[in-house]
Figure 1 (cartoon, rainbow, N blue to C red):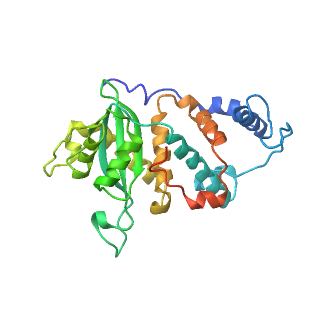
Figure 2 (figure 1 turned 30 degrees about the horizontal axis):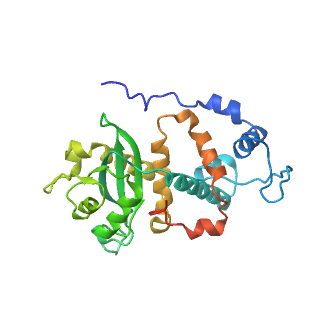
Length: 275
């Protein structure tokens, strides 16, 4: 079997990372360079004097690594995911696109079963392909349900005109033909989509998502924060070709998005149809 060059790329090693970011001074200097490449200037008064403030980072694992309080860790973790979500609104998928309906979350004890479970969040998973049939980018977008109107709005927001959509036989995806999209469904006739090569890459992406969430997070509010967790996965997936610059690109995303105080983080913006 040929080596997967994306999976086995060297990335940024820990010694290299520490050489650039070992001290707070080095981290602060990098942050200032990204945020103000020509030097700090206050957007309100035009002044060039800058004060610094400390903040905590990430989730429980980073809380332990960095020695910050859990509330601080939670807030910055969600700020970073918010930056990833906002970055994801800057692009759309085009060309050949594998699509599937999916759910985030599981059934609660004593609650409804199956797709009617109140703890399951429906979302549309889509992966665009290269001319060689290899995966390029993904979008994982929560929806209110798999209705014709909802999927039509999803397609107009997240797909480029002229794209070809490859779903299973779920009826709602046929609505893409009402816009400038081609629709080429594969009827599964009771079989699992994973049994079809037409769904290889969308199933791979969904499998990776499940592994990522199960391995990192024990519990979170699916209904409230699904958009951010799905966006964070998509952000990493779409930048997998250059792991060495992943942290720098996230820093750029975080420093160029709008301020996100706690009240805004808890409010939760709906990014399904953001443009």
